[in-house]
Amino acid sequence: MIPVTVVQPKKLSGVWAAARAAKGGFKFLAGGTDLVINARHGKNAHRVWIDISGLKELKGITEGRDKIRIGAAETAAAVCSSPAVRKWLPALAQACRHFASPPLRNMATLGGNCANASPSADAACALCAEQAAAVISRAGKIRRVAAESLFLGPKHTALSPDDLILAFEFPRRAHRGVFIKLGARESFAISKVSAAVAAELRNGVVCSLSIRLGAVGPKIVRPESAEKLLLGLRPGAAAIADAARLCAEAVSPIDDVRSTAAYRRDMARVISKRALEAVLLKTS
Amino acid sequence: MTAVRKTAKAISLTAENGIFSIEAAVNGVRGSWRVGAEDTLLSALRANGWKGVKRGCDTGECGSCTVLVDGTPELACLKLAVSAHGREITTIEGLGSPAEPHPLQEAFVEAGAVQCGFCIPGMILVSKALLDKNPEPSETQIRHALDGNLCRCTGYVKQVEAVRLAAGKIKNREVRRAGQ
Image (cartoon, rainbow over all chains, first blue to last red; front, side, top):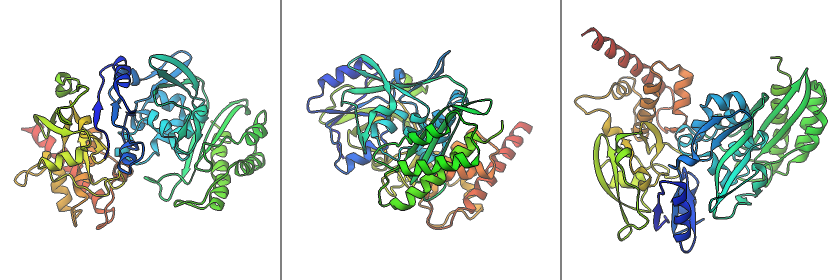
């Protein structure tokens, strides 16, 4: 086990002071559910951990006129029980409800799920489908980027060590959304395949659609050809089946401890089809 | 915000010889704790005599080390002890005593939900958090709450019965109290 010291700043300004003072590198600590395990295995070993879990600047779920904002240190449990998230971000609410196990959901944060950048991260997959922008601060200088652009590969992000995700922002728009995952069990299992879909329909016509697939590539997969196929259509079962086949063609899964590439590819088709049907064919 | 957190001071940048002094309440007893940066809440609790917190997988997968942090179930094996600064921690020892067990403890015994017992502290604590929020949970809600607690002995039937039994006991107790 690693940290030589842990710093708990009371304010965001204290984070930057602690970062400057930390010689030899530091790591931000939020829920700790990945960091502590990694450290125990000698990975990501840094002498100083800066505990950001209690900072009020990273907390809160707010519904503004144009956007929904979720603090990066909000836990999966807080996200899935938020009425604003359930109303405006249905795919994210469902992903956070099926994420890990209940005590882990009380610890693991949305920001941590992204910064850890596992290709099978359920919340990260839904964040991309829900068109999240990440609000990032480096030494107090704030920038906004598409959350999806942060992911470069397995456990590899575009974030520099002193980039801190403060929040995620989403356009406030009425839409349909779903998140479906396939794991070894119904609960408490890392996804073998997951699908997040968010769509807007006008008179039955698909006018916006994002499909994202998790655990079937080095990063979260966007099957653009499937999105394009369905845009502008009043999709029926046949079009959805075609789109689901395109989803399976877009993935590049691997064989690993949880599944095989062949099974994952076929399940990417099945899970995408179910997710698209749930979003596009429901009547209300 | 808990009473402890309101008065807790921010932890300074430097610990003395690698040892932090944190303030936390464990099972209602407030005190100052000396912990290392590398200590988990699990190791700190056990080192201080709270052996009801079990070390199972030590990787956040079994739920045996579940404790309540300000009333919410968290995994002590993945939580640094310093992160308990300003918090109220409840372990199984904080629920009842052999002479006066908590209704959940009674119910787990009566329903035969305990075999080796290793997973039970975690199961009872998540059940406590569930019943505090939702005094009359459905079977689905009970199963959902217990999702993170693995048991290798008795399966997953009797614990669910025990939680239902406990919900009834707590309700009856409250009715009796109201009638007094």
